[in-house]
Length: 275
Image (tube, rainbow, N blue to C red):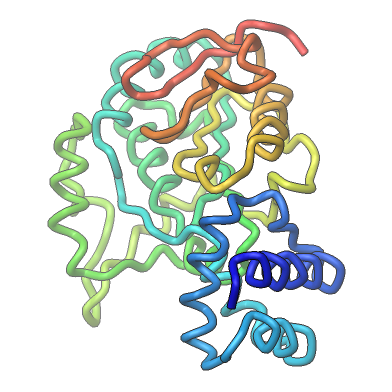
């Protein structure tokens, strides 16, 4: 199949998903989408993208599985510890000045980043005045996030990340091991809300003090990146903070002027302009 034909089939599939199910991947990076659809095509034993499109349209049970390929599902507790250390040492002192706080993890996947922030805020004495929101477009990911159950084999890596992130307690204080899994303590969900929200189609989520959206924008095209960053700017209070992934930047965004660099190496920005 030629690249032109493959691109056409891919765009027709994304159009079909949008019009039938209202999930919009049309502004995602084409290279990333094609790579993920190749994996999905093999999983569903489809000979072509057109065959996959037929199954998506006529077999509703296929969609949730396909979403797992089209959305990003790779994370760790305290992934990129230097980011969390920068939050702890540089951002938390500013957040302490507010009587109540709202934190949003956009594209929360299975919840690892959100729980990392809950643990960090608990260790810094801010959990009781904070509401944590985790959003994703993948319903299966949200179910996993609410369950808070992770592979026990990941715990040594999570524990080392937590230590490097300046952890003030033992990570074992926050989970119990059972049947080959690590189950996070239910108290970590006491002030959390998990919700379906799309950066592609949905509006401002709430008035936030900290938004963390890491390793999501790299899968968007430029227009969609601009939309998402505009959404974050409109959702943040003035002087609120935005954290991005290590390969992401506001440099080429139309809304870059809304922010100043706060911790350059860790891609943490502070909103300066009222919107």
